[in-house]
Structure formats: structure tokens, C-alpha cells
Length: 289
Length: 289
Image 1: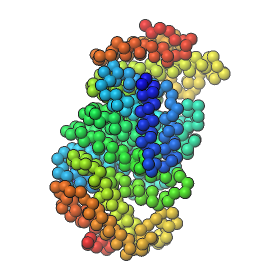
Image 2: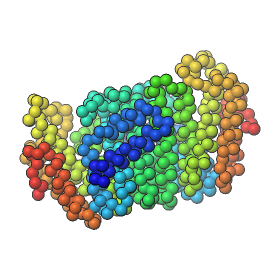
Image 3: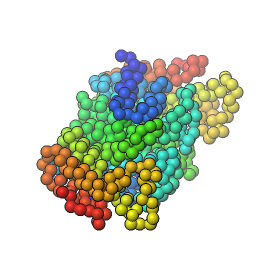
């Protein structure tokens, strides 16, 4: 089964369990709505790539880790979109969960997706029970306190902090956890994979800035300064387009240099180089160094 | 160390980790505010009592399980109190978390407490890694979908259901999980402990109804029919005071009859009989049969 199919199947299995006998139908529907259809599933892809590089000796655990990371990503989007945070009406080209299902179900949807993530890793770790604790701790560290997504979001409620940095941290921490969880699922020490994942997360963010700026220039008159107006930092605004592209290359190189010794290191590096180009619109993609 | 001290220490340890280096101070404070000072801590007491009845061979795991159950209870209170649900201003004689810290931090506080619960069991299960999966699954089942607290709350968003039943289910499920988690932490099969915990949860709810009715009658003119006005079922309204006291006795007896074979069964039953009387105001307490 290819990577995309493994991820969707693992997510389907998790959502099927959540929507099982006795489930309140609207919450079950809201959870599916939040998870399907997905975006690029880049975080679970990263988890599976690292598990594969580490030998993929326990595919069930790797699938569960990948699904858990994506479930937590989806949960964070549902809660971030709530009226008390971003008050966003659209996400992935459809109404956000609270718009479609109401605010109470959106709160519960995020809660239940968080719980489902941990349940999923517990179900997936049956063949190698000793791997479960590192998996749970990796995943929890990425979403909880003191340094996970909830912590990153909470910095927005603090006076006088550099919010832009925390926005960035929120992206990086789940990428780092994806890489670490993939390693943990394969029985490898997760910590050495943190920098690899974090650098890829930063690269993804820079590529996102580049895409936004490129679309802004090419498309329907959205003002170029919008990121600045909204108080968002953008690598393109900070460094210019050429500088941002250089920064992207450098982050990818730093990620590659941080790949720990493992059986599939060479293959993993080749995948990263290939996918990093896919981060960008075709006309801007250049060969990574 | 006595049971109360074990529980507070386990909760302190968990909250210290959550508020560790780099934590956003206001979210860390909100989490402490939601957890301390506690109520009766009856759910974690139940978890520790069952772990003790099962031999308490791994006190660290039992403490972690007890703390996790209480963290999830606190998380559910924080989210239930939100404006989009009960819109409650006071809880445990102080302003609710969203009143004290704002709605964004209240959402994040609930999220982070859920995550911390799972992190806590993972940290507590190091001596016996094989016990972690049953612990995580027990805890997740009590709060997630299809049958946990989030599911119970979601039934309020469904048309045409008997909400009173789901309110009751929400109480029962966490008591059941407390008993099961205590057993799992001690290396016993959790499932046989479900009915014991669930019956105690029902008993606690009936005792609560009795306390409310007794206070209503004795005190400052709150109308006796308020539960009915608010669409809440009350054992006292349904059965009368004598009937409710009978029902409480019967639930306690059913709980006692459901205690699985274990080394400390006799001691556990004695504790339950003693504590069940403590559920009630002194003037209404009578010897359990």
C-alpha cells in the first residue's frame, strides 16, 4: 500500500472507532468533516518516511503514530478557527467546523480528536508495548504544555511577546513530533529526530510564505502588504523573494544534515529533496543544492 | 502517605511538568486554577482504592492513573462551563476559568489538561510498560468518542434525545474509568471493574440529588421544583426523598456485589460502605445495609 493510502486507511480506522456504537451522530460527523478530505497530509507523511528510514519494523505502530499526528493537527485547526481565536469561516475551501456544526460541537470535536489521537497510538502499539510511552510523550509534548501547540496558542494571550515567533513555533513543533513519532514507532530513540523535523517545519512555513507572496503578485489584487498589516511575519517580507528561496534551501540542507544514522538515511534524504521542491509553485521551484 | 496527600502530590507533579521551562505563564496559571483547590477528589480516591484492593504493586502507576482521571474531570468542567455550553460564572466558589482568564485560555486550558492526563499516565507507567495501553484506552474511552464525556456532552446537540439520561451517563463513565484505571495500574484486567465504578457514579449522582433537595428545603427559598424547571432529572423528584434514599442504598449494594475477586476486596467494600454515608448530609445519612 502506498503512503497516501496507508495514511487515509489509518485515519478511517480511527474515525470508524470514534463513530462506533452509541456515538452521537452529529459529533461523529463533525469529526469526519474536520479530518476528511485532508490537505497534503504532510505531517503523517513525514512520520511514515522516518519510520521507513528506521526500518519500518512495526507498520501498525507507524500508521497509528502518523494518524495521531494528523488527528492532532486537525484538532488544533478546529479549535484555532473558533470565534474566540481566529473566528475563521472557511478552511480547506469549506465552512469551518463551528460554522457547519455550531460552536459547542466544534469545541467537543477538537477535544474528541485529541483523545482519539492517544487512543490510536495505544491501539497501534500492541506488538511492541515498550514503544507506547515514548510515542505518547512525543505526541503529548507537541500539543500540550509547556511547549506544544496549546502553549504556542496561549502566547497570543500574553502581553508583550513576539507573536510571530510563536506562530512559527506552533508549526515546527508538530513537524518535529511527526519525525520523532515515526522513529519511536520503529523502535528508535525519538529525540535525535527533533531537529530534522523542526527544520522541515520551518522550511514548510517559509515555502508557504513564498507561495502566498507569489499568488499575491500573480492574482486578484490582494495587497502585497497583507501579512504585515495582519501582524504576521513572512520570510518574503523579511528577506525578499530571493532571500526567502535561499533560506528555504538552507533549512532543507540543515534538515538533511540532521538526519540521524539509520538504515534508510540515503533514501529519506532523496525523498526530502524531492518533496521540498513540491513545497513551491512550479515556476519558483529550483533544484535543492 | 495517605490517599489525599498522594493525590495532591501526583497532581502537583503533573502541573509542575506542564508549567515547566518555556511555559506561557497565564495558561500555566489557568491550569492550576482549574485543578487547585479541588473538590472531594472522589474519582481519584476511587482509582487509588481499587489499585489498593488489587495489591497496589505499582504505586507510581496508580498515582498517575488517579491524577489523570482528576485532570480529565477538571478539563471537562472547564469546557462545560464555557459560554457556548453552560455559560457558568462560578465553580467551586470562585469564578470559572473563562471568567477569570478569558475564553481563549479556557479552551486551551481544557485542551492542555486532556493532553496532560495522557502524558501523566505515560510517565507513571515506566516500571510496567505493558500496563500503559490498557490505561490509555481506559482513560480515552471515558472522555472521548463514542461513549465518553465528550460524547455525552454532544448528545445535548442532538434533537430529540433524553438529555437527562446522557447527563447521568457523563457522571457514570468517569467513575467507571476511575475504577478500571486503578485496576489496570495494578496489573489487573480493567473491564471487570466497570460495573462497580459505574454504580458508584450513579450512587454519587443520586446522593447529589438528595443533597440538593435537602438544601433546597432547608435553605434560602430556592424553589423545590428548580431541577424540573431546568429540565434536569432528580432522583428526589422522580422517587421522593425516601425512594431516593432507597435507590442510593440499592446502588451501593449493586456496586459492592460487583467487586471482582481481588486481594483487598473486603477492605474495599468496607471503605465503600463508609464513604457512601459521607455522600449525604449528616442528618440524612443512615447505615448502609
